[in-house]
Length: 286
Ligand code: SF4
Ligand code: SF4
Ligand code: SF4
Image (tube, rainbow, N blue to C red; front, top):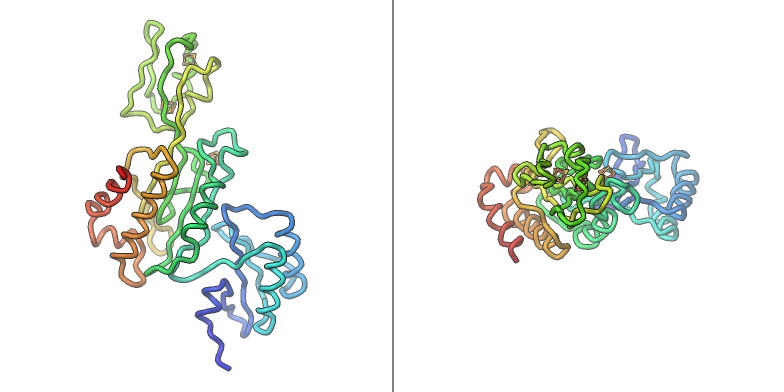
């Protein structure tokens, strides 16, 4: 019987150069695996692979040297350990994320929660070409948001609270953008310079800042044959509902306008960033 390599690839089984061998990609949402997942992956790699795994550049785990005849049993065994296969080809790939504010002191958003919600919403959706989401918790950008077709970066909107301020000047020192000034006991914020990093809030000893978590969304990043940085078009997004309206609009724009085999960046260039901005802004405004 002919082997349907397309379907296998769609299900995470990537054909190797060695005949009838596949490298199985496991979906690792946000780079997080439980001990249960890890034990099962180790077991499968030992019993059906060659006793090792490969960690991909997008936080995935691949188990190489799975034999064609073992594919069904491997799928069953992995499912028992709570693992699902990743995907390849023209569809939404596994969402990547840094640890975010559940663990990291610099984090502005719960990246893991957003990654899971994006994955639930879009994972495996068929599109004209591959489509990648990445979620990073703050300006440090450990997850490199702008490499992705859609990148999400955690931000903090800030407002000074005069009553609680003791004029220590710490916030002015930690602001890398030079957005803050302390004169005559008063802080002034140059909104045009602020990059929403949230460092002023975290440094303040008296909690003299009102802060609101936010999301910055970039579109059109690609880091393969062509290297382009995703571009930011919208002001900070301040609710999950608004965020998902914007991501829905971005992915739908791609679905509606992309040619087969064309990355989002090139669809935007061909159709016009003004047109993308229009649909994103409508989604932003609700
Ligand atoms: S991007 Fe920010 S929140 Fe995420 S791991 Fe790096 S420092 Fe922490
Ligand atoms: S959020 Fe960051 S850039 Fe903006 S004022 Fe505070 S420290 Fe400066
Ligand atoms: S760090 Fe806080 S207390 Fe100190 S100057 Fe800034 S706002 Fe005021």
